[in-house]
Amino acid sequence: MSRYRGPRLRVVRRLGELPGLTRKSARRSYPPGQHGQNRKKRSEYAVRLEEKQKLRFNYGLTEKQLLRYVRRARRVTGSTGQVLLQLLEMRLDNTVFRMGMAPTIPAARQLVNHGHITVNGRVVDIASYQCRPGDEIKVRDREASRKLVEANLQYPGLANLPSHLEFDKNKLEGKVNSLVEREWVALQVNELLVVEYYSRQA
Image 1: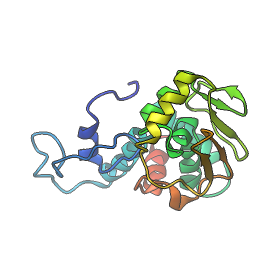
Image 2: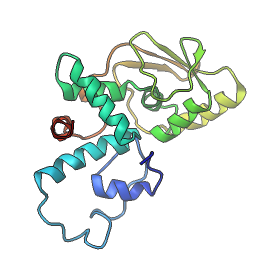
Image 3: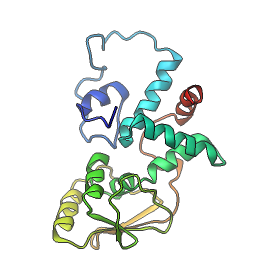
């Protein structure tokens, strides 16, 4: 199945707040569907599945992509869960979103795909591009690109700029200073359960 394009609030009601997916908040607090209000006790598998789905929907990944990230994280020394979150947070679409250039990650992905963003002076239109410390991320020097981002900056998705990024609103350029710290990940997720979920899969 390819990327999710259905109702976003439906996902938020099921999984809880997903800051990267939508800025809207659901009016109803219980999950969608006929049996949303009378939920049974969830199994351990269901809890792990839900944490995995949070990552998938928040960062807008397919199942195949997320599995690839988990395998990459396993190969790196250190906590697999933390490395996985770092890999996802350092994607170009997420970095553009965290700098405030787009209200959501899908909107940031569109900015990147349409060639509005440059990395180190070159146009990069691949949303999954892995940003590294030292990368300079700018808005392309075109009127259409600047207008788009200036409009988005009026209503940023998240109020605080993470400590590993810097961004100049006047010049419309930013820089990645380091890898993201765990406490700056905006999504409320238990990454260990995600790793456990995949340890049984692959």
